[in-house]
Every structure is written in structure tokens, then in C-alpha cells.
Length: 197
Image 1 (cartoon, rainbow, N blue to C red):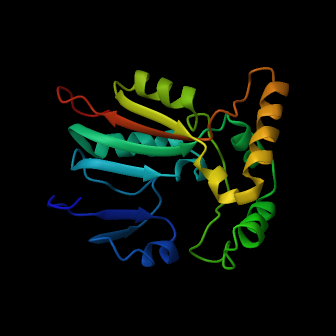
Image 2 (image 1 turned 180 degrees about the vertical axis):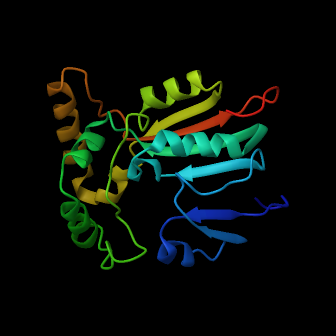
């Protein structure tokens, strides 16, 4: 963002988490499902690995789209609920996620106030098909999308065996799940010729 004049506003329901952000010009403590955001006020709305933690994620997308100016962008990063990794995350206990972060990732404070991991919900929209359908029905244009398995890098020597295991599970799912990616990133444009979303 060097050379770009911008103002960065952050919204989080967790006051401890938002207090840890030193890069924000303004902090709003509030639930993304109900927080009052001004209509068509923002050039760019960025949401990174949040929607999977929200029951009612489509409502959050509605609010973000309504707050984006016509011609503006929504940048959304999510894990795909239809990936093997997403399936395992949805069907495993939260305490296991905390232990993984503490013992494998060596984040000793994982799960304490203001620090992830946070419990996962994975509404239907938190997927490749879900986002495509949402954008199509709300008149939004996906102008760029990409996928990755970048989380495997954090597993060090276990990355190879983890990847092979996930691919085996995908094959056993008869095409319902994918191991080709876990994470998705979308650049979504709100058309300039219409108001609202």
C-alpha cells in the first residue's frame, strides 16, 4: 500500500483481538452480522478467514456488499468447507484444534482470549460453489479467484504424508470432497452501475 492514501478500519466481535491490531486507524468492536456499517462507504472490504467462524455468514456478506461503494471490491479469503481439510475441521472437536495449534504449531497461547483458533461453523456459502452462487444471485462479479494448500508448509516434515492422506480421503469421498486445495481467495467487484447488493 505504499504511496496509496488510505484509512484502515477494522471490525471484530472480540475486543481482545482487535486491541492487538496496531495497524488500524479505527477499531469497531461489534458483530459483523449486526454492526452498523455506512452504505456504499468503502472502496475495498477485506475479510480474511473469518466467515468460517460465523453462523449466518451470508448475512455478513450482505452487510459487506452493502457497505462497498459501486465499483468497489470485496476481497474474501476462506477455507473451502468442501475440501477434505474443511470436512475434517467441521467434524472434529474444537479442543483438538486448540491442541494442534499449541503442540504442533507451537503457539502456546492458542485458544486464549484474543487468539485463535476460533470455533468453526462453515456455513454453505463458505465454499467454492457457495461463493459462486452467492455472487451470481447478488449481482456481484468474481474477477479473480485462486486456491491453495499453503497450510501444508506449516507442517514441515509431515506435509508430504498429510497431503497423501488428504488425497486418499478425497478419493474415498467419491468426488464430494477435494484435496487439491483448502484455501480460497476471491476478488469480487460490485458493479458500478447499481446501488446495493
